[in-house]
Image (cartoon, rainbow, N blue to C red; front, top):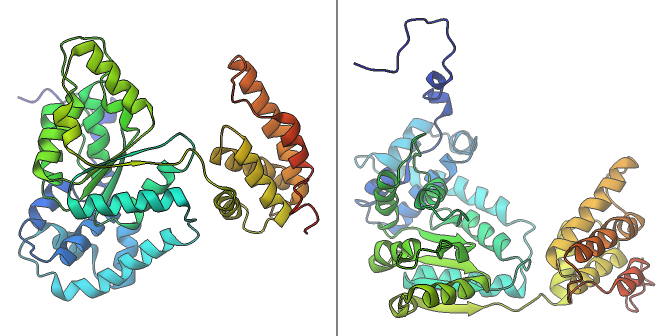
Length: 390
């Protein structure tokens, strides 16, 4: 007899609404993988996976249905029912998916680092192997990875590796990225087979950001690196494309673990099909393009100043974002739609410089703290090539 009942119907039971159909969103990746296993055409499979991704985004499947004139139930049947013929539905749905992808591509800035990462993603998909991309923080790795996965919904899924060391957190993050049901009392033994069923079909690349958290953080000397072992045996051995994005901490954690446990990493390193080391920072032209994307109507000297500040700041790209947000805040307080050069100056002098110097002081004088006198000159527009412009 069920224990989830109450004789007193007047008592509030919050859990009863959790199973409402209104809260269900999206088609489950492991079921879509079963459907794709009987679809021979790679173009049809790519479309089906794209629709599965869009079904996880609020309102997107409804939008696709309205634009294509195809009912949502028919779209769902295409993605789940092996008896549905994809051919008559392919062209109208492909046009709608391509329109969605184009929206995500508009205004995206391509940098040298972005080009290197895109080349790595493409090789990962082509070779169906494991690719490791390493670079310092705040150079645009996460932004590039997210954008690539958004623009290739039929080929890739983005997942940020959680810092908690337990297996459940790891598999919940991947299940959420793929679109797999996570019960309120989820267990690793239930999630892992569904994840493997979705990925071992080979249609999707798994992009794992913050991959340094794949290494154990506990102090158990004889424990295996469970996440690393799973990547090897469940994904790499089945030719699942996996792209790992990490900082130098990835190698520091690996060396520390090997020293502590004596674990031999030859099998792991042998599965890395390609390693890409990114530059330490972006060049000035790339920084100016990023600044222009944040301030499309900004004056030339404001763009140059933002690029120069980011080049000197340890925050790098994040410095541009923080300054522009400050400038927009000041412009909004004045009732102006777009920030001006004066707003950028004020944002640097009253926001960025005090914040950066205070943070450096809190960190007890980092050797890489910003040269404040130079930054103050930048805020006054002193670059020789741009101070007289606009």
